[in-house]
Length: 318
Length: 281
Image (cartoon, rainbow over all chains, first blue to last red; front, side, top):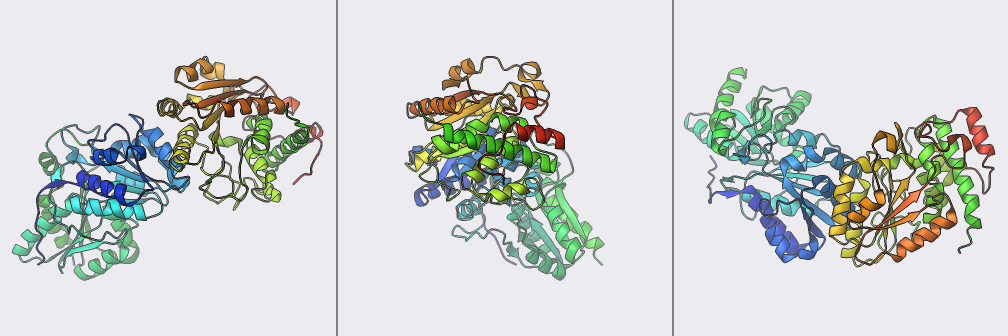
């Protein structure tokens, strides 16, 4: 069984900040816009290094999205930064018309996604953003799992032409993927090989899936763990190959089960290889205040929840 | 004074295009289109430095953004008659598989259009972004935009208006079509917006007024004056007083023709008031 080492807890938003800092040095077309959350998004270094390419928009996210769309005309690659809630729901029509329908090369970078935002509570804990963004034609949707992957994704999306939604979070979590990884948009990452059950996870739930797989291994159950960082376009081939091998699937994400990764996986399975599937996701609910660990436990978003769903899906397997 | 007689024929022809386009598909927005015909003709023929060899990035030329996308008929007619695409394509307005969608879009690749618009209130932000990229690129050409007056009820405009002044966006001329009408009636009836000149000035903009917004000579004089105000550290707003439905008597001074097409008989009356000049499409 492949072993993963946590090289020290780090927040995924800092991975974004590190990636943006590097892009500032290597790609002169990259510009950054922020709606009064520069520190939270870890954009300070880019701002300090490139004041001419950093645009403080104030608390005005709709305007930020429109400006970003306009800035692409003439060749700039705008990266917008604010919380996931204000990056999607608040500005959905601006993104829909001025960015997605207009086919603009804007990178919508969203921190503090999901319940792990913590104590600020449900007003800020969006659990619907993946659904909102994946429904937009032409939008690439990425949810990264750790610092290193977020940094790699930030660099990769600058090379991709077209609108991208990059989702990451606030808490410090295990950093376990390779520092020098090549991030391929739309390509699943096989973390662990297995034959009894497939666990398909995205974002903060990937580390939880690895923990669950280690427990399962001790019980003699061989779990395959796949990290889907790109929810759209989805790597159907990787999902199908694994489902055909194991015969059952658990999806895991920090998002409502309506509109999330799980539904996208279900569609692939329903079309090509119907397979029992269980969902680790929030159950059509808003979040609340609490620590990230408390919230992950209460809303069924940790390795314990994954283990429960694995047990259930194994029972459904013929 | 600029000699504008050569533009008058084009204005009449564009009016005919507008009437015929909306009549053919029994839909579209003739009122606001007719009200801005003289503005579009003046802008594309006398004011903007632009290339008809269209590139999305528009480096080294002035760019125009239409925020109130529903007046697409006048936009399409003037783009076609400025050489952006074949005039005959006006025949496809609002039809299936056309590049001339109900509201303008980049999605079908129509030359001349750089952003989709229709959902109101977004064009000011887009124009500002394009203006900032011009500055970053060291490109000293200007950004022009057009907005409806009713459209200013959308809050995003005021975010953008605040931002533009704070960031000294002085390569932008945003024109507001002050026709005083919106779908449900007069703007002063639906939601009075007060003194727009004072509001823009309070937000830190330079404001110019064109009282005769349906007079080509007055528009050219006014827009040249606006151009002279660019580069001075402040964004420039032009309040263009127009008459909705201008040039077709029964469509004038009312909101009734905001989004309604003329029937056969009304078309004939409208066309008779605007006899063919440089040739129908």
